[in-house]
Image (cartoon, rainbow, N blue to C red; front, side):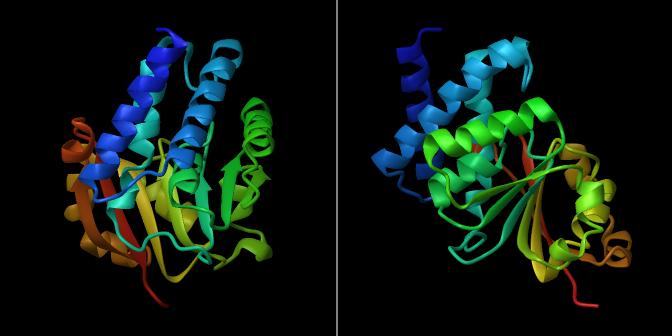
Length: 228
């Protein structure tokens, strides 16, 4: 796939997805998102950040999926502290920051090659509101500076929902919101588990298929941390 083709496919996919969510993407933000995808594509070939077999179109699809939480209104705001648990190569945090930012964002990642990439992208794209926590979420959730510190948390492809709840609970403030990227089976499981969720301090607000935004039948689960 040629570079021009990558650019065209990404911009068309992002604009279409954003429009379906009632959002308008400014040219400067679309270009910054393209720069991120180009860097990720280049680094992935060398360092296997998201899987070499994925290819450029697969990375475009990942990026488009990453922005689907913007279908939840008022999830992100300029002064809200946001955390991306197990950010990997910056998904979903960086695409969300580019389109909906700036806002205070912490990317949690423990693998050295991915940390190096995140630092590179932050510097190259001038993403000044992004902080990188170079360690495991299991460690972060025991550190006093991070307890009850975040109003919104995202988790994608990092662990199963029960494990994510355990990691997110200490660092989210009361009333904080957690968005988990899940498959259809896990979405159904969460809808059937209100008692278990409440025992872990959460309430399920909704689950939503992203198919009408991206034509791929992925799901988002939006949960609220209840006050103790």
